[in-house]
Image (cartoon, rainbow, N blue to C red):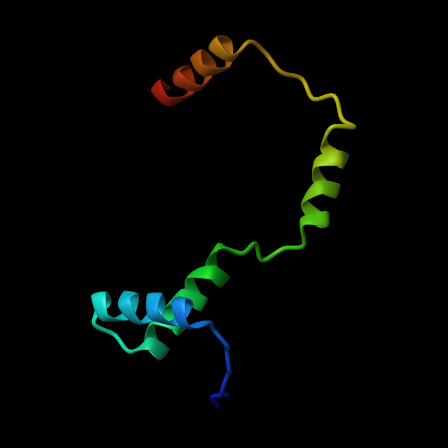
Length: 81
């Protein structure tokens, strides 16, 4: 099912949208739908508070680590086995 969405733009904004749609050879409605899809794709799907909580939890741990060059050498040795 499709729904109608009304968006009010001032004259300058609408003129810019029309020019952009014309350049892509699509209708204004098509351009707006594509722009909204692109904007939604850029949005994070998860709540940022969940990500921050995960980072906060991770820094509470003391995981063993090594010098970066040593770790890379170990990884390379694992590839050649």
